[in-house]
Structures are given as C-alpha cells and as structure tokens.
Image 1: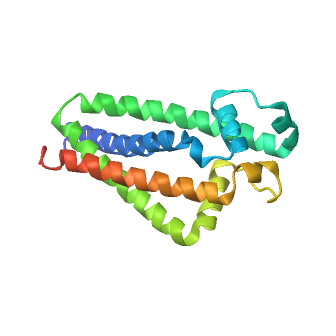
Image 2: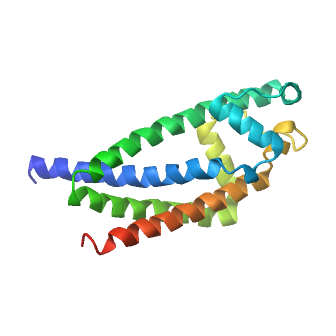
Image 3: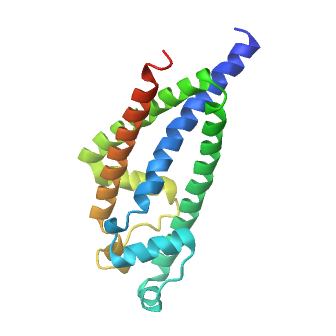
Length: 189
C-alpha cells in the first residue's frame, strides 16, 4: 500500500471519528440546556458549573465541601467537553469543505454515532446503575461522586434526572444519525 493511501485511510478514520464525536457532543450540548430537566437547584448548579454564574448564598451554604469539590470537577469536565466539541467541529467543517470523500465520512460518522449510542442505550436500559458508576469512575477518578440521598446535590440531581437525560441524548443522537445518514446515503454512493 502506498504512503498516500495510508495517509488517506488515516484521514478518513479521523474524519469519521470526528463526525461521530461531533454528533454526540452537539446533541449533548442541546440536551444539557433544557431547563425542564432540572430542579431549581439543579438548573442553578448547571449555570454555575458551565457559565460561572454566581450561586445563591442559600444554595452555597447548603452544599457540603465534598459537593462543591464535585461540582468544581464537573465544571472541569464541562469545559473539556466544550474544547473537544469545538476541536472536532472544526475538523468536521474542514473535512466537509473538501469534497466527496469527506462527505462520505459524515455518513459513516453518523452510523458510528448511532451504533455507539444504541449500544450504550441498550446497556443502560438493563444496567443503568452499573453504567452510571463506570462513567463516574472514569470521569471522576478522585471518587467524589457518591452522596447520600438526603444531600442537596442528590436532591438537585436525582437518579431520574440522569436516566431521563440519557434517554433524551440517546434518542436525539439516534434520530440525528439516521437523518444525516439518509441525507447522504444516495447522494454519494
């Protein structure tokens, strides 16, 4: 295989992975801003974590030091997601502007995102708590993500919140992936 073909193959994989990642993160960015998903404290904590909006003094005093540490870690994760989303979006835009070969990556990336979300969603339907624990162990290795049910943070973000958000993200990603795939399916075959 010629060096040029290897480079082209690597670039196609990067393009496909970037599209899949961009689709997932775009849906996440949309869903995370739906205020009806949150309790009043949950919405305030999201705005604080994502946009550095001040917390009310009453909520701030209700949060334990451990809960605040966790929310600072969440803030870091949210900012990292924003940076990755911007980076892969720029890659996708660049690839899409170069023509047919990269537009084919859009189709393949939509299949990749849809497949990944279907697998995670099916797993989550049967083992949500296990998936939730695994996610938090990977993203928050310091272990500050477990709180008693009576804690302010657990009241602001009950388990049902995460389950609902996961279902909405899964459904929207799957729908978007199918729509993107349908738009490009016959156009570039």
